[in-house]
Length: 388
Ligand SMILES: *Cc1c(COP(=O)(O)O)cnc(C)c1O
View: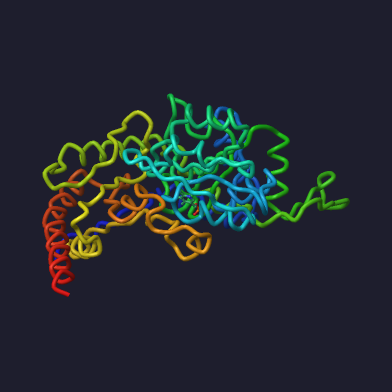
């Protein structure tokens, strides 16, 4: 058992000024959506090239609103990746539509753009790609495809804050872009998210879907009308205030994540048989540092051994078409070999801006022995099943 403090796979960094600012908001008498939300939206919009941005209580809510705005419903299909947080496909089901999975690219671990065309049908309404670990899907190819087939795109850019395509921030380009400020993401508002939109009409529609479809005629609710059954997805000023405290640190957070990733690459023992992520220092924000264990290793043993060494390891994500919910749609093992292989073997190593350089060495020192035990467990299991 290690004597040093447990190293989680991620941890938010909240400075004292932000903590003090939360106190001020709480004392101000206005704690739900108000001036802080408007300021947060304005700063996000400035970061995204002046595009309209609306703050949401979560990225899940942002994607639900985006699907509602596009009128996606029963009979419609939305093409997405099986390798994501389950929110990505759940929102499609909740809209009454069908998530159509396409396998991943073995190298990027993102949706394989070369397989999308074959999945498009007359019922396809939108593409819903994910930038796994903050490595952007190729936006040039993505939008060429969408344009050729007249499809809308909802970017699940939950993990992409601080990432870029061609030097332009993710969020400043493309169609509808959903970003998360969940506690584990690159900047946080505890829970929260935003939707980036194309124009003022879309922003208006987003506001209606965000909060009960309620429209005011002027400054008061006198003369209010409701035109659609909107949800309840607004962000609070308390949360927005935390987001405002995080935004000025985004560049430094991203730079630190890149340094840590470089350190992992420089010191990783390549003879262990692990598959490292693409070495991308142009676009990726290094939301996670994920390696694939050799097929012979038992992942649960690896995770336990790392935990015993004082190191947290995450799994992001099991291939989601194999969950009961999606098997009910007819998906089964073998449908998406790359997603299944990655989903079985992926581990997220500690990666967050407050990590010390020495923490990388600590992770890598524990990783070899843990992997050794995980492979031994795999061999023992194989011998047992051979005897049986
Ligand atoms: C975190 C995440 C979400 C959901 O974001 P919330 O703000 O928690 O709703 C969706 N998709 C991906 C890829 C995520 O990582």
